[in-house]
Length: 426
Image (tube, rainbow, N blue to C red; front, side, top):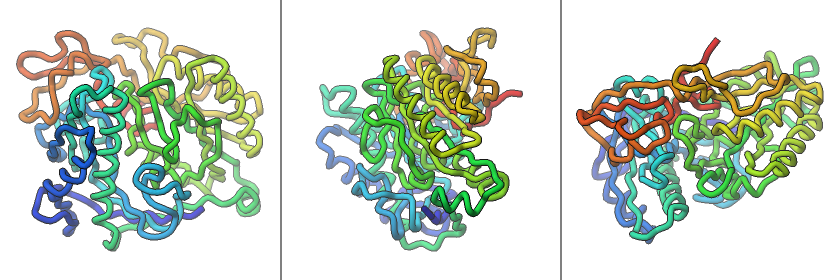
């Protein structure tokens, strides 16, 4: 499967009378986009705002981050199963508004949304402080259940990203990158002497409001399966979960998965990137055993020499991670796991809830319990009163002067387990 991705750099977002891309500026007709989103009868109100890199702005409580993209030709449409039909994506040409994002905000759960600071100490820890963000603050109709509110906010973000992405449909991209995965036989013939490497992508799927969607299907309902890495770039997988902000894989993460990017960069040079196996994270032991068994069998079926495994979340998912690692290693396939740590504020506690001798090659995204101090911001987008309740915060985290003392957990993307962050360790 072959995909061309055209990058159109966006260096600023402004509200204007006409939605368009002019040079490197994205103009948004505020009223037009608001009317589109308010077609959803579950929405009471929607407020649009802009947050640029370096501004004294705090966005909270953050639900998701989505990159605007558009399918120019071939391979279905962006966000299949939601904004487009469920045709297979991942081929043809896709244009990207690089440097822009849609950020959705709303108090769905309260303790599992996050913070994006556009400047100051907090900006160091989130990749989204470097983007020009169009923020949607969506208030639901009174009495709307939490799971319905999550769906409403998720769809609003996807619709807004689709609306903005379409503005780039007829623009000539400044850069075009080509990504291609050969069939199994073609790969063997093309790279007979290179190690065969696959990527096991674990998806959060541990109960209500812990959802990830594959072509519109809740990942709780899947068994491990193969997917082309280019399908991720067209939105085949989107975030629908409410988990700790620091290690949530937002939709932006899935669209720009750095493990996929790095494997493609070495494909045909130092390794043969065979493809991606997606698997879910489960609640019950029998389901964990079933999924890890099938994941290991697929790795063996592909005759992999090595596999990279990434997880999402912490605690219970650590068991799924270690099961996958142990069973894949038992087939003679070398593994590297990517995770983060919850090692206590002093860093002295056990980092993972599970462990095994087979997990001897580990990449960490940092310790989510590390205490940080965030300065006050001149402008708040959303609502600041949930800060004391966000995972990683506590009663008194929000000080009277607007400063925040909390664990790194509160920052969206701070310890991301795809490696899409600024922290690690030696």
